[in-house]
Image 1 (cartoon, one colour):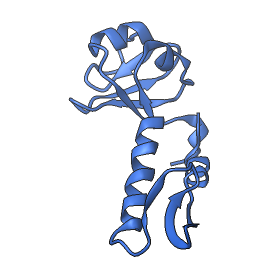
Image 2 (cartoon, one colour):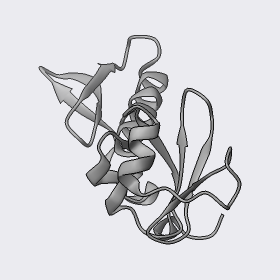
Image 3 (cartoon, helix red, strand yellow):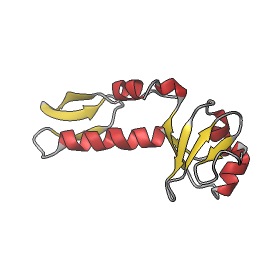
Image 4 (cartoon, one colour):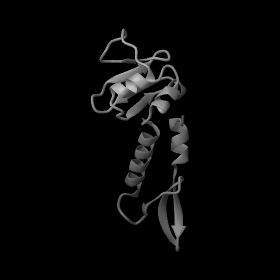
Length: 125
């Protein structure tokens, strides 16, 4: 899993010159905008946020199952939070008495994507 620190390093903003004109670019290779246009910094911020959201989105049961114990995810539609306390998941809407396997949780969510809010690799909050 990519840390926020690594993600920001991978998407650092830089200035490159194309045909002698300065251009705003992301380290990942995506061109953002011409320096003389309005808003290249804001556009880059949106790009970084969008790519971070994509990195932190779970779309398959195998991805959910691969997350470490202690991970916190959220389903976007209902904002229920799921916490992996063991190999099982607990939903904030069920209390701690109901345990779900990754496959069961993903099926319950009708295969809607989940957003990873925190993993133990992210460090202290």
